[in-house]
Image (cartoon, rainbow, N blue to C red):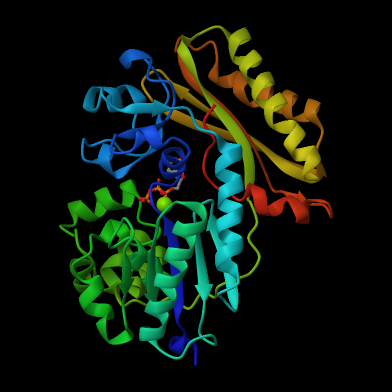
Amino acid sequence: MINSRIILHLDLDAFYASVEEREHPEFKDKPVIVGADPKNGQGRGVVATCNYLAREFGVRSAMPISKAWKLCPQGIYVRPNFELYARISHDIMSIIRKYSDKFEQVSIDEAFLDVTNKIKDYEEAEKLAERIKKEILNKEKVTCSVGIGSNKLIAKLASDYKKPYGTTVVKPEDVKRFLDPLPARKLIGIGPKTEAVLKEMKIETVSQLAKAGVKTLVDAFGVFGYRMHEMTLGIDESEVTEEYEIKSIGRETTFEEDIDNPGIVFNAINELVDEFHDELIASDIQFRTVSIKIRYENFETHTHAKTFEFYTNDKKIIKDTARELTQPFLNIGRKIRLIGVRMSGLKFGEKQKTLLDIRKSNHTLLP
Ligand code: DCP
Ligand code: MG
Protein backbone atom coordinates (compact mmCIF):
# COMPACT_ATOMS: atom_id res chain seq x y z
CA MET A 1 0.00 0.00 0.00
CA ILE A 2 1.42 3.30 -1.06
CA ASN A 3 0.86 5.23 2.20
CA SER A 4 2.75 2.76 4.34
CA ARG A 5 6.11 3.89 3.04
CA ILE A 6 8.85 5.36 5.22
CA ILE A 7 10.85 8.09 3.51
CA LEU A 8 13.87 10.04 4.80
CA HIS A 9 14.84 13.42 3.42
CA LEU A 10 18.33 14.60 4.19
CA ASP A 11 19.51 18.18 3.64
CA LEU A 12 22.99 19.41 4.48
CA ASP A 13 23.14 22.43 6.78
CA ALA A 14 24.41 25.70 5.27
CA PHE A 15 26.23 23.47 2.83
CA TYR A 16 28.80 25.67 1.05
CA ALA A 17 29.49 27.57 4.27
CA SER A 18 29.90 24.32 6.25
CA VAL A 19 32.48 23.13 3.75
CA GLU A 20 34.36 26.41 4.05
CA GLU A 21 34.32 26.12 7.84
CA ARG A 22 35.66 22.62 7.67
CA GLU A 23 38.46 23.71 5.31
CA HIS A 24 39.31 26.74 7.46
CA PRO A 25 39.29 25.98 11.20
CA GLU A 26 40.10 29.67 11.77
CA PHE A 27 36.53 30.51 10.61
CA LYS A 28 35.12 28.80 13.71
CA ASP A 29 32.58 30.92 15.62
CA LYS A 30 32.60 33.61 12.95
CA PRO A 31 29.83 34.55 10.51
CA VAL A 32 30.80 33.02 7.13
CA ILE A 33 29.22 34.22 3.90
CA VAL A 34 29.85 32.43 0.60
CA GLY A 35 29.17 34.38 -2.56
CA ALA A 36 30.33 37.25 -4.69
CA ASP A 37 33.10 39.62 -3.63
CA PRO A 38 31.51 42.26 -1.35
CA LYS A 39 34.14 44.89 -2.29
CA ASN A 40 33.63 46.85 0.90
CA GLY A 41 29.92 47.11 0.26
CA GLN A 42 30.23 48.01 -3.45
CA GLY A 43 30.11 44.39 -4.71
CA ARG A 44 27.26 43.54 -7.07
CA GLY A 45 26.71 39.79 -6.98
CA VAL A 46 24.66 37.76 -4.50
CA VAL A 47 25.05 35.52 -1.45
CA ALA A 48 25.06 31.80 -2.30
CA THR A 49 24.67 30.81 1.34
CA CYS A 50 25.94 31.66 4.80
CA ASN A 51 26.42 29.83 8.08
CA TYR A 52 23.86 29.97 10.89
CA LEU A 53 25.81 32.63 12.77
CA ALA A 54 25.60 34.95 9.76
CA ARG A 55 21.86 34.21 9.54
CA GLU A 56 21.49 35.77 12.98
CA PHE A 57 22.48 39.05 11.34
CA GLY A 58 19.72 38.61 8.76
CA VAL A 59 21.97 37.43 5.91
CA ARG A 60 20.24 34.99 3.51
CA SER A 61 20.85 33.07 0.25
CA ALA A 62 20.24 35.10 -2.93
CA MET A 63 20.48 38.43 -1.07
CA PRO A 64 22.63 41.10 -2.81
CA ILE A 65 26.13 40.83 -1.35
CA SER A 66 26.10 44.60 -0.69
CA LYS A 67 23.13 44.13 1.62
CA ALA A 68 24.87 41.27 3.42
CA TRP A 69 27.85 43.58 3.94
CA LYS A 70 25.61 46.20 5.52
CA LEU A 71 24.05 43.65 7.85
CA CYS A 72 27.28 41.91 8.75
CA PRO A 73 30.47 43.85 7.88
CA GLN A 74 32.50 41.76 10.33
CA GLY A 75 31.66 38.53 8.45
CA ILE A 76 34.18 36.38 6.60
CA TYR A 77 33.39 36.60 2.89
CA VAL A 78 34.48 33.68 0.70
CA ARG A 79 34.25 33.10 -3.06
CA PRO A 80 32.60 29.75 -3.89
CA ASN A 81 34.68 26.72 -4.81
CA PHE A 82 32.18 24.64 -6.78
CA GLU A 83 34.56 21.79 -7.60
CA LEU A 84 35.17 21.23 -3.91
CA TYR A 85 31.45 21.32 -3.03
CA ALA A 86 30.64 18.93 -5.86
CA ARG A 87 33.31 16.49 -4.69
CA ILE A 88 32.16 16.54 -1.08
CA SER A 89 28.51 16.25 -2.15
CA HIS A 90 29.46 13.18 -4.19
CA ASP A 91 31.26 11.58 -1.24
CA ILE A 92 28.31 12.23 1.08
CA MET A 93 25.77 10.88 -1.41
CA SER A 94 27.85 7.69 -1.68
CA ILE A 95 27.69 7.30 2.10
CA ILE A 96 23.92 7.63 2.35
CA ARG A 97 22.92 5.79 -0.79
CA LYS A 98 23.80 2.45 0.79
CA TYR A 99 21.20 2.88 3.55
CA SER A 100 18.25 2.92 1.17
CA ASP A 101 16.33 0.66 -1.19
CA LYS A 102 15.66 3.60 -3.42
CA PHE A 103 17.73 6.75 -3.50
CA GLU A 104 17.06 10.08 -5.19
CA GLN A 105 19.43 12.98 -5.12
CA VAL A 106 17.48 16.21 -5.61
CA SER A 107 20.20 18.83 -5.59
CA ILE A 108 23.82 19.26 -4.60
CA ASP A 109 22.93 18.94 -0.90
CA GLU A 110 19.71 16.97 -0.53
CA ALA A 111 18.40 13.48 -1.15
CA PHE A 112 15.43 11.22 -0.49
CA LEU A 113 15.85 7.68 0.79
CA ASP A 114 13.04 5.14 0.65
CA VAL A 115 13.82 2.84 3.57
CA THR A 116 10.45 1.02 3.73
CA ASN A 117 11.99 -2.42 3.32
CA LYS A 118 15.10 -1.75 5.40
CA ILE A 119 13.45 -0.95 8.72
CA LYS A 120 10.25 -1.86 10.50
CA ASP A 121 8.92 1.35 12.09
CA TYR A 122 9.46 5.05 12.76
CA GLU A 123 11.57 4.42 15.88
CA GLU A 124 14.03 2.45 13.80
CA ALA A 125 13.92 5.15 11.12
CA GLU A 126 14.91 7.74 13.70
CA LYS A 127 17.85 5.59 14.86
CA LEU A 128 18.92 5.17 11.27
CA ALA A 129 18.77 8.94 10.75
CA GLU A 130 20.99 9.52 13.80
CA ARG A 131 23.45 6.97 12.54
CA ILE A 132 23.62 8.56 9.09
CA LYS A 133 24.05 12.05 10.58
CA LYS A 134 26.94 10.87 12.77
CA GLU A 135 28.62 9.03 9.93
CA ILE A 136 28.49 12.14 7.71
CA LEU A 137 29.80 14.31 10.54
CA ASN A 138 32.65 11.91 11.37
CA LYS A 139 33.73 11.25 7.82
CA GLU A 140 32.99 14.55 6.11
CA LYS A 141 32.92 17.05 8.99
CA VAL A 142 29.65 18.68 7.96
CA THR A 143 26.22 18.43 9.53
CA CYS A 144 22.84 17.68 8.02
CA SER A 145 19.21 17.62 9.08
CA VAL A 146 16.84 14.73 8.44
CA GLY A 147 13.07 14.54 8.07
CA ILE A 148 11.13 11.29 8.27
CA GLY A 149 7.60 10.80 7.00
CA SER A 150 5.28 8.60 4.97
CA ASN A 151 5.98 10.45 1.73
CA LYS A 152 8.44 12.84 0.10
CA LEU A 153 6.43 15.97 0.87
CA ILE A 154 6.25 15.28 4.60
CA ALA A 155 9.89 14.14 4.78
CA LYS A 156 11.09 17.29 3.03
CA LEU A 157 9.08 19.65 5.21
CA ALA A 158 10.30 17.73 8.26
CA SER A 159 14.00 18.02 7.40
CA ASP A 160 13.58 21.79 7.27
CA TYR A 161 11.79 21.91 10.61
CA LYS A 162 14.74 21.71 13.01
CA LYS A 163 17.88 23.00 11.36
CA PRO A 164 20.80 22.66 11.89
CA TYR A 165 21.57 19.05 12.89
CA GLY A 166 17.92 18.24 13.63
CA THR A 167 15.89 15.09 13.17
CA THR A 168 12.13 15.43 12.82
CA VAL A 169 9.83 12.43 12.68
CA VAL A 170 6.27 12.97 11.49
CA LYS A 171 4.23 9.80 11.89
CA PRO A 172 1.07 9.46 9.77
CA GLU A 173 -1.15 10.23 12.78
CA ASP A 174 0.77 13.49 13.41
CA VAL A 175 0.66 14.86 9.87
CA LYS A 176 -2.19 17.31 10.43
CA ARG A 177 -0.74 18.65 13.67
CA PHE A 178 2.63 19.11 11.95
CA LEU A 179 1.33 20.77 8.78
CA ASP A 180 -1.37 23.10 10.10
CA PRO A 181 0.83 25.76 11.72
CA LEU A 182 3.46 25.81 8.93
CA PRO A 183 3.58 28.89 6.69
CA ALA A 184 1.85 28.07 3.39
CA ARG A 185 4.98 29.17 1.50
CA LYS A 186 6.82 26.09 2.79
CA LEU A 187 4.68 23.89 0.54
CA ILE A 188 6.36 22.79 -2.68
CA GLY A 189 5.66 25.09 -5.60
CA ILE A 190 4.48 28.06 -3.53
CA GLY A 191 6.97 30.78 -4.39
CA PRO A 192 6.93 34.51 -3.61
CA LYS A 193 4.30 35.30 -6.29
CA THR A 194 1.80 32.68 -5.09
CA GLU A 195 2.56 33.65 -1.51
CA ALA A 196 1.62 37.26 -2.28
CA VAL A 197 -1.69 36.21 -3.87
CA LEU A 198 -2.45 33.99 -0.88
CA LYS A 199 -1.70 36.84 1.47
CA GLU A 200 -4.30 38.94 -0.30
CA MET A 201 -6.73 36.07 0.27
CA LYS A 202 -5.78 36.29 3.98
CA ILE A 203 -4.07 32.90 3.81
CA GLU A 204 -0.72 32.54 5.55
CA THR A 205 -0.67 29.11 7.19
CA VAL A 206 -1.33 25.62 5.87
CA SER A 207 -4.38 25.38 8.10
CA GLN A 208 -5.85 28.56 6.56
CA LEU A 209 -5.05 27.13 3.14
CA ALA A 210 -6.88 23.92 4.05
CA LYS A 211 -9.91 25.88 5.23
CA ALA A 212 -10.06 27.87 1.98
CA GLY A 213 -11.24 24.68 0.30
CA VAL A 214 -10.42 23.11 -3.00
CA LYS A 215 -12.93 25.15 -5.06
CA THR A 216 -11.55 28.54 -4.01
CA LEU A 217 -8.00 27.37 -4.67
CA VAL A 218 -8.81 25.95 -8.10
CA ASP A 219 -10.63 29.17 -9.01
CA ALA A 220 -7.58 31.18 -8.02
CA PHE A 221 -4.73 28.94 -9.22
CA GLY A 222 -6.15 26.40 -11.69
CA VAL A 223 -4.85 22.81 -11.41
CA PHE A 224 -2.14 23.88 -9.00
CA GLY A 225 -4.94 24.87 -6.61
CA TYR A 226 -5.97 21.25 -6.55
CA ARG A 227 -2.41 20.19 -5.77
CA MET A 228 -2.23 22.81 -2.99
CA HIS A 229 -5.35 21.35 -1.44
CA GLU A 230 -3.81 17.85 -1.57
CA MET A 231 -0.65 19.13 0.07
CA THR A 232 -2.63 20.64 2.96
CA LEU A 233 -3.79 17.07 3.61
CA GLY A 234 -0.22 15.79 3.44
CA ILE A 235 -0.89 13.81 0.28
CA ASP A 236 2.05 13.01 -2.00
CA GLU A 237 2.24 9.78 -3.93
CA SER A 238 5.36 10.56 -5.93
CA GLU A 239 7.96 7.82 -5.82
CA VAL A 240 11.59 8.09 -4.81
CA THR A 241 13.13 7.68 -8.25
CA GLU A 242 16.67 6.50 -8.75
CA GLU A 243 17.53 8.58 -11.76
CA TYR A 244 18.47 12.15 -11.15
CA GLU A 245 19.04 14.18 -14.24
CA ILE A 246 20.32 17.67 -14.50
CA LYS A 247 17.82 19.65 -16.51
CA SER A 248 20.04 22.49 -17.61
CA ILE A 249 23.59 23.77 -17.62
CA GLY A 250 24.53 27.41 -17.64
CA ARG A 251 26.28 30.36 -16.12
CA GLU A 252 25.46 33.95 -15.39
CA THR A 253 27.46 36.98 -14.45
CA THR A 254 26.73 40.34 -12.83
CA PHE A 255 28.70 43.19 -14.41
CA GLU A 256 30.98 45.29 -12.28
CA GLU A 257 28.90 48.27 -13.32
CA ASP A 258 25.70 48.54 -15.36
CA ILE A 259 26.48 48.28 -19.07
CA ASP A 260 24.95 49.85 -22.15
CA ASN A 261 27.62 48.79 -24.61
CA PRO A 262 26.43 45.74 -26.62
CA GLY A 263 30.03 44.76 -27.34
CA ILE A 264 30.68 44.19 -23.64
CA VAL A 265 27.51 42.14 -23.31
CA PHE A 266 28.49 39.97 -26.29
CA ASN A 267 32.00 39.49 -24.90
CA ALA A 268 30.51 38.38 -21.60
CA ILE A 269 28.29 35.88 -23.44
CA ASN A 270 31.34 34.48 -25.22
CA GLU A 271 33.24 34.15 -21.98
CA LEU A 272 30.37 32.43 -20.19
CA VAL A 273 29.95 29.95 -23.04
CA ASP A 274 33.71 29.28 -23.15
CA GLU A 275 33.56 28.55 -19.43
CA PHE A 276 30.98 25.78 -19.55
CA HIS A 277 31.37 24.41 -23.06
CA ASP A 278 34.24 22.10 -22.05
CA GLU A 279 31.92 20.69 -19.45
CA LEU A 280 29.29 19.84 -22.09
CA ILE A 281 31.86 18.06 -24.22
CA ALA A 282 33.54 16.23 -21.35
CA SER A 283 30.16 15.09 -20.06
CA ASP A 284 28.94 14.09 -23.50
CA ILE A 285 25.84 16.27 -23.28
CA GLN A 286 23.90 17.67 -26.20
CA PHE A 287 21.13 20.24 -26.06
CA ARG A 288 18.17 21.48 -28.07
CA THR A 289 17.37 24.77 -26.31
CA VAL A 290 19.48 27.85 -25.71
CA SER A 291 18.16 30.53 -23.39
CA ILE A 292 19.44 33.86 -22.19
CA LYS A 293 18.61 35.79 -19.07
CA ILE A 294 19.03 39.52 -18.93
CA ARG A 295 18.56 41.81 -15.94
CA TYR A 296 18.27 45.56 -16.29
CA GLU A 297 19.64 48.07 -13.80
CA ASN A 298 16.25 48.23 -12.04
CA PHE A 299 16.37 44.41 -11.56
CA GLU A 300 13.64 43.79 -14.15
CA THR A 301 14.59 40.39 -15.52
CA HIS A 302 13.75 38.71 -18.83
CA THR A 303 14.48 35.30 -20.26
CA HIS A 304 14.25 34.36 -23.90
CA ALA A 305 14.79 30.93 -25.46
CA LYS A 306 15.14 29.21 -28.80
CA THR A 307 14.62 25.50 -29.38
CA PHE A 308 16.09 23.63 -32.35
CA GLU A 309 14.70 20.55 -34.03
CA PHE A 310 18.05 18.82 -33.59
CA TYR A 311 20.43 18.13 -30.71
CA THR A 312 23.88 19.65 -30.83
CA ASN A 313 26.84 20.57 -28.66
CA ASP A 314 28.25 23.16 -31.02
CA LYS A 315 29.86 26.13 -29.34
CA LYS A 316 29.28 28.48 -32.25
CA ILE A 317 25.57 27.67 -32.26
CA ILE A 318 25.33 28.57 -28.58
CA LYS A 319 27.18 31.83 -29.03
CA ASP A 320 25.28 32.88 -32.16
CA THR A 321 21.91 31.97 -30.68
CA ALA A 322 22.60 33.69 -27.37
CA ARG A 323 23.65 36.81 -29.25
CA GLU A 324 20.53 36.71 -31.45
CA LEU A 325 18.27 36.24 -28.40
CA THR A 326 19.95 39.09 -26.56
CA GLN A 327 19.86 41.59 -29.43
CA PRO A 328 16.25 42.81 -28.90
CA PHE A 329 17.05 43.70 -25.29
CA LEU A 330 19.96 45.97 -26.19
CA ASN A 331 20.11 49.57 -27.40
CA ILE A 332 16.81 50.52 -25.85
CA GLY A 333 18.23 53.16 -23.57
CA ARG A 334 18.46 50.90 -20.54
CA LYS A 335 21.53 49.59 -18.81
CA ILE A 336 22.18 45.94 -18.14
CA ARG A 337 23.17 44.50 -14.81
CA LEU A 338 23.36 40.77 -15.45
CA ILE A 339 23.58 38.37 -18.37
CA GLY A 340 23.20 34.58 -18.32
CA VAL A 341 23.29 31.77 -20.86
CA ARG A 342 21.76 28.34 -20.31
CA MET A 343 21.31 25.10 -22.28
CA SER A 344 18.31 22.85 -21.69
CA GLY A 345 16.49 20.06 -23.49
CA LEU A 346 19.53 17.95 -22.74
CA LYS A 347 20.44 14.55 -24.13
CA PHE A 348 23.03 12.50 -22.31
CA GLY A 349 25.55 10.36 -24.13
CA GLU A 350 27.07 7.14 -22.80
CA LYS A 351 30.17 8.76 -21.28
CA GLN A 352 27.91 11.11 -19.37
CA LYS A 353 26.58 8.41 -17.05
CA THR A 354 29.84 8.12 -15.18
CA LEU A 355 30.17 11.86 -14.77
CA LEU A 356 26.60 12.47 -13.68
CA ASP A 357 27.43 12.03 -10.02
CA ILE A 358 29.65 15.05 -9.76
CA ARG A 359 27.41 17.52 -11.47
CA LYS A 360 24.15 17.26 -9.70
CA SER A 361 23.51 20.84 -8.79
CA ASN A 362 20.33 22.59 -9.91
CA HIS A 363 21.53 25.84 -8.49
CA THR A 364 22.72 28.77 -10.43
CA LEU A 365 26.45 28.91 -10.47
CA LEU A 366 27.88 32.23 -9.55
CA PRO A 367 30.51 33.74 -11.82
N1 DCP B 1 22.56 27.85 -3.12
C1 DCP B 1 22.85 28.89 -4.00
N2 DCP B 1 21.94 29.87 -4.25
C2 DCP B 1 20.72 29.84 -3.62
C3 DCP B 1 20.40 28.78 -2.74
C4 DCP B 1 21.37 27.81 -2.50
O1 DCP B 1 23.95 28.92 -4.56
N3 DCP B 1 19.83 30.81 -3.85
C5 DCP B 1 23.60 26.83 -2.84
C6 DCP B 1 24.37 27.15 -1.60
C7 DCP B 1 23.83 26.21 -0.56
C8 DCP B 1 23.41 25.01 -1.38
O2 DCP B 1 23.01 25.54 -2.64
O3 DCP B 1 24.80 25.88 0.42
C9 DCP B 1 22.27 24.23 -0.74
O4 DCP B 1 21.08 25.02 -0.67
P1 DCP B 1 20.11 24.99 0.57
O5 DCP B 1 18.86 25.69 0.15
O6 DCP B 1 19.97 23.60 1.11
O7 DCP B 1 20.82 25.94 1.65
P2 DCP B 1 21.96 25.61 2.70
O8 DCP B 1 22.37 24.17 2.66
O9 DCP B 1 23.06 26.57 2.50
O10 DCP B 1 21.27 25.96 4.08
P3 DCP B 1 20.19 25.11 4.92
O11 DCP B 1 20.86 24.77 6.20
O12 DCP B 1 19.05 26.04 5.11
O13 DCP B 1 19.85 23.90 4.10
MG1 MG C 1 20.96 22.65 2.74
